[in-house]
Length: 222
Image (cartoon, rainbow, N blue to C red; front, side):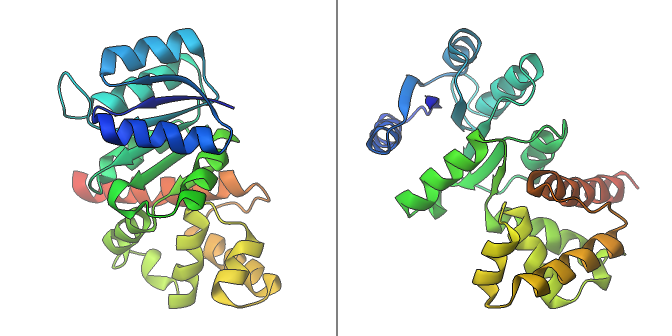
């Protein structure tokens, strides 16, 4: 699996490269700026990109904007974004095209190599890998709004795990319940949110997150 890594800090970039190589990923390129990232994504066509949000020359959202532009040129290009802080706008932009293959992890919370590599693989395969803190903030923002306020505490737990890209089996193991119970909670969640059910984990996660973010946008636009 070929990876493009974009990170301006040498030590972190080198660490990411070494970690990925240790798990048999091929590093197609390791770059430190937005223009380099744009060229690498266009010319090398990697299986997945691991991208820091803030890259030179702007040090604002250069990395994200390069990744979004690349996804417009190549719909579905898997991108795992690394960020120092929770920025809900970034999650919305990543989810906007609904094509999957996206991830958003906070740098300070990536402590486990196996979990990070699992996130890279999940995104590369077209799934999602969203940091629990990002999901928690999205949910908290909508917690007083209908129909979000109608979800039970257990349903909120299930939806947070769904949004991380977890399967029903993984959710059941995490919450120490049966898969049947998780399926029931999932059905209730979609019913309360007015969203169609789907056996496709990626689509159901995107649907939930897109719904939450649309609601946030509507609230901000009032």
